[in-house]
Length: 203
Image (cartoon, rainbow, N blue to C red; front, side, top):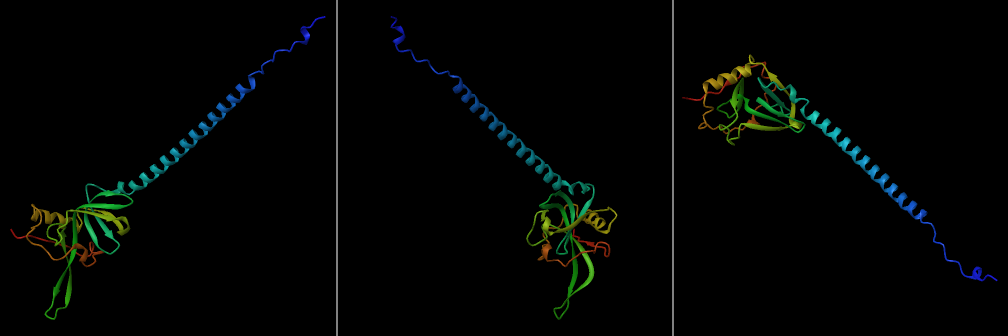
C-alpha cells in the first residue's frame, strides 16, 4: 500500500499577475491625470498670452498716430486745452511735455466787475505759475476728449515758436502769476478763431 498519497500537499502560491496589472493601471491613471493637467496649464497660458497681446495692442493703438515732429493739442472734458508734445498714450493716461496753454485777457473796472476783451495769451507751463509745476503733465484718459497733431503753420505753433525766440532761456521765473492753469477760462475752439499772444519777458 502506498501511503504517499495520504501526505498533505504543499500549498501552491497564487500567481502574481493580477497585482502587477493593478500597479500598471495606477501608473496609467497617473499619467493620464498628469497629461490632462499639462494640457489645462497650456490652455490657460495660451489664453493669458492672447489676452495680454490684445491689451498691449489696445494700449498702443492710438499712440501710433502721434507725430513726433509736431506739437499736439489735448482737449479736456472741462474745455481746457493744452499744447505740447505727447510722449505717451495708453488706456490709462496721456503724458504731455513742453506744455503751453491759453489764458483769456481780462480787465477789472472801477466797480470791480471783470470783463474779457476776446483776446488770448499763450502761457508756458512752469515757474511762472504760483504752484511752480514741472514741465510735464499726466492726464487721465477719462479727462481727455480728444487730441490732435498741429501743423507748423497754425496760429498756436507760430506763437510757440515766437515765444521760444523771445525767451531762449525759458520764461522769467521772477514773474510769478497768482493763477494756475486749471483756473483759466475755457479755450475750446479758440485755436481757429483767435491769434494767441505769446507772453514776453523783459530783458
